[in-house]
Length: 229
Image 1 (cartoon, rainbow, N blue to C red):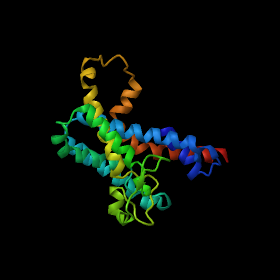
Image 2 (image 1 turned 135 degrees about the vertical axis):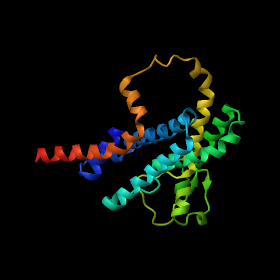
Image 3 (image 1 turned 60 degrees about the vertical axis):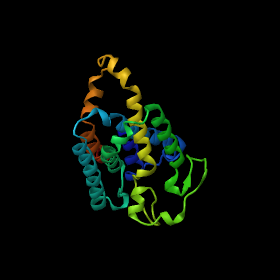
Image 4 (image 1 turned 30 degrees about the horizontal axis):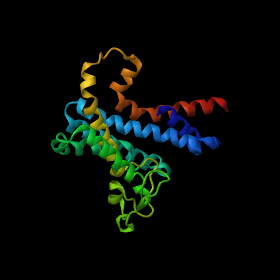
């Protein structure tokens, strides 16, 4: 993710002419990051304590990013970014989990994955995933910023990082059910087998790292650009 955002800064903020980054390869790279990010967030939800506080913290951090981009980067402003989504999913799962705990893990994973695939292109007004179009969504649903938060962006809506509840909530739920499916094996596993201290540190402080990595990367690139003149 940090490497991808570094490349994004180079192309869109520093004007690097890199056609590959605007092509299919970079798109697959970007999608692999956000898919695993959201899936792992759902996977880790049952592992933490104080879900309300954690959800509100992540949700608030998402709106801090929105405020900063609106004030300082209006041409690249972010509305309903990935942290806003993950915070929303964390909060929604608090009441939903009371019913979801009775759903068999395998069935829940399969249904969540299927619904995510079905709704993957809902932001564009269609059903299906990527180039596969299975139907269209009524245009009347695409009205304003509130509907954009749900997954139906109105005319003129723009965000450089946009993750609506639909379809991404179902990928988060897939992670939740995947954790339940893997829980017995995780309980038997030795936690030290694959331990890597640098990765453990990044995982432990993942939210602060996410919040500061872009300012740090931008500062380093700005300094490097100044030295290269």
